[in-house]
Length: 259
Length: 257
View 1: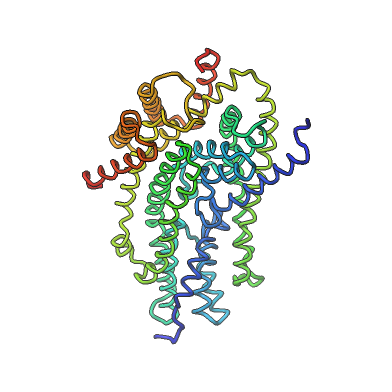
View 2: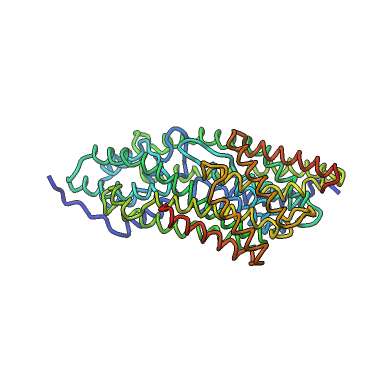
């Protein structure tokens, strides 16, 4: 039976968007983002459930186990807002809302980890470090701009897309092809990282190796060293162990009078 | 001169404050990536009067740790505290700004910081498990104010973790740097050389995680574009980076990525 529940307004969803920045404020091993999810959804629950008892019940329902990639949580928040709106007006049940969250969190977690942590962040970092190595002071700003144009824009958009599509992942993927974008960012990152090694002889004075060798030889040696370290990492060595090994090698070179 | 005079103690506390605030961005608040070493390092260096140390340490640690990802319940090494602490130690422990041997030594110190930061993070997240229970009222039901207050109280835990870690690490680091400064010149030269090698380790770390092949084609194309354009055509370095990115982009078009 349909009830006369209030409809969610744009301002309510904007409230959810603002609160989504705090979704991991109380992150713990046991409950992960559960409290954060409930906290972010408060503007919507407050709007839909003026009755304090019902509000408390719905808030408790959203404090159940929840974890996904924190940015893509915005999509789940939008979808949960829509599901709550439907529930308040009698168009679906409590079980539907819980099921929706359970269904979405794992695939969106994998998708978001791969896109944001595994491709966008390394792309922005590679570009910023490549610029930084030339001695440009504004490299950190470049990193923040490259990353946050995508991050904040998507986070805002995803609350509304989640609401409009009612959590339809297929609609999300057709709007934003995260898989293709991730592959492109990864390729760009690799090209820039290659360029970092290729321009070794032109790095800023702080980073320039104090070795008297010609630029082509320096670049070739840099490439050989990089490929050697890739092989070591692939064989199971950790960056920490390689750092210790490099420092030992540098000590030997310095004592031997090569530096 | 005393190692910890009043001015130094105030500076160490200031560094810890930077770590606490910037550290919030790492997990608990926003995740705008201000906490990434490439931003946190230079910011700390600028605030403590040694931008060069911040740029070198931040840029170096960024590529090494950028693909250490917080997936599921895995908590990676805290590169934020490491970058802020290493920069602060370099800025406060050097006799002049931008002292490369000290910067190199501070980068080496981050190796020891990694397990400490991971353990502290682990402890704090275990303690956070109590928060949802605290958000409930006496009748066992949550209230808006209870959820809001206790959830946001988690920010204090994250702040304190980064603040106290940085306080301890910088204090210990300054003692070690004073010992390092007394070492022979050859050790100082070694640490300067160490700084110049580390961006290559960063490049290797990124390439290792992004590609299945050691001899990745895109990596090699980027290398060739960079080397040829800078050495043969004397193209400015930033233009070479844009060219390499363009080359990579073309590659994605031809190979349907």
